[in-house]
Length: 279
Image (cartoon, rainbow, N blue to C red; front, side, top):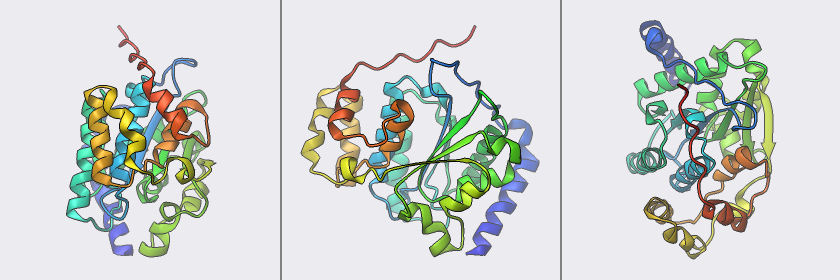
């Protein structure tokens, strides 16, 4: 598996060398009180984690409900870079891109990590966002998949900038935190932290937001066509599990152990309109 990582690093270097002038400039952070700053997301869903088909869409719905679409500067999905199940990848892509389009995100910032060009572009973009970080301009990375793509971006970034990056994960010794290292000779959450970013480790979200009967989410169908579509992604995943979305809820609210009832109240509240574009 080291050959895979070596190839990915070489592909990233080649992409940056050829395409660096066209990498999108890091987004301007929101002012204090207007949001939580820049946010990056990562998730797999292309292998192992069917629940990501629901959690990814739910995470974007949560961020959109808070009016944070413009703050999401990078999303590397399908980030199980070692292999993919074609049907898993299809379902994950439909969830991420469908939610991105429905909830008003700039999907040019979304990158398919299972595609070599998408992986290289996504890691290069995330590296640029990390390098733009500093006091008052921190970046929060929500880690909902293996750690490898985030590790690659941090490893390529400047050491000082890394210290202004918050790396959010849930649980302790979870599959996503360890899988890349134990099964693919890659890197773990601890390896990511050793590169100098801030450890933000909240409790396992499966207790309240994990597998449940789909009827617990029936209310989504009453909140308009976009939320009805969100319910359809839970149907595809079949488990009613949106546990990884608890990290997005934490980023927005600071609540480390969200309940389904709290999430229902949050999603049932009228959305915050996105901030007007600067003139």
